[in-house]
Amino acid sequence: SLGLEEARLSDNVALIVKSLNFMGVAMIAQGDLNSAALTLEQALILSEAETVPPELDSLWGNLGLLAFKAGRFADAAELWRRAAEEAEARNLSPSLYHSNLARLYLSQGRDGEFKQEVAFALASSLEPSTTRSARAEALNLAAMAALSEDKPTEAQLHIDAALQLDREDENQTGLAQDLEILAELMIKTGSLKQAASNLDRAFYLWAALGDKEAQRRVFEQMRNLEKQTTLAKSLSSYQEVLNTPALFDPINRLCP
Image (cartoon, rainbow, N blue to C red; front, side):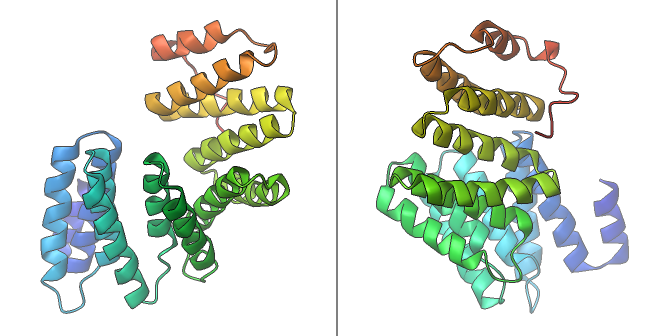
């Protein structure tokens, strides 16, 4: 890439590592895990050769994401723990890595470990070095944990704060996640029409982002909701988007 070439021409190792790290994340997002592995490993070798390794916590974190996408969950957990420790050693916020661990444990049904990592993520998200997106991620997970403990008021506070941050940053992935949790909260409190509206927004956000797995997850939530109420919009339109994504036009659907 042009950024990588410029970094190499400058002979600045930190810039080269940063560029390779960014490229690795982009490759993961595109599903090219083999290229991502090669790129991130190259960045890690360059980083660790320096007296003060640049980007090290981020590299461990992204290698954890790569392992998670590849289905190597034990490796992902170890890499995220290493990233959190490295961040703390550098006086950086480890919140994002605890959030990643929380989602991993949630996917495995390990409720106690999930809630423990959520608590770590939320507490460390108050540190000044935490990015807004990492803070929103911790709040999203905290809302989820509160819902699992039947604490709707607490969940509402967390998800409202997450939505505000994600809207201000126009973080579409974060918004889609927030709307899913908000829909679950609405279902628990009996506001089924609002839940349907939130799921509609989440579905089309995931469609715009090209995340088929998330679209299917939201579609199943819609099906479950349809059993409880009559949706204003037929599920056939969502099924059509799932089957023929080229028909979908995301204009005016990106920022709820």
